[in-house]
Image (cartoon, rainbow, N blue to C red; front, side, top):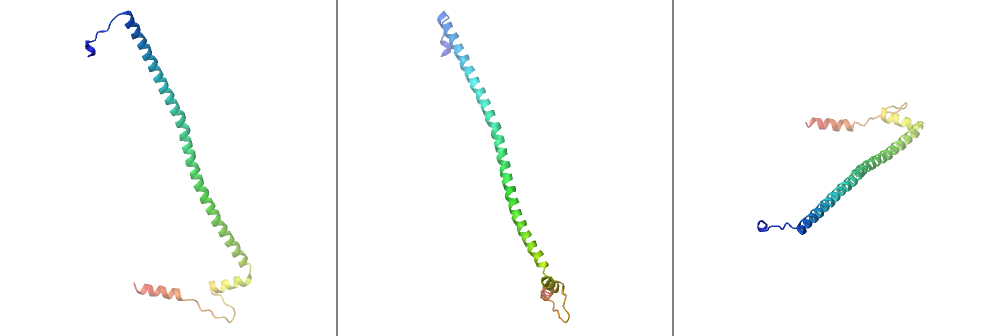
Length: 130
């Protein structure tokens, strides 16, 4: 249909065409400017967001390490208390003598020691069944 239309080449149409071309150039310039502003805004928001995400990951990692350290500290305190209790007990001569008699089969004069053979007997019975 446009092929059948012949434009008028008078001064008014030429003026209108120039105005339309100027208007289109302004619109293209506005679109490009908006696109550049949008790209810059994306860059300006993306870089801090990436850094924020990295900082968050580091925070989570540090929190888990802190929790592990706290649990380790509690266990070490328990071990320390147990060791301190053992030190106090080992300072008592009666306790040391009792441990030596039971663990290392030492005896007093005239005392008979009968070792507990139950672990050895159960071990032999389990080996016989094989």
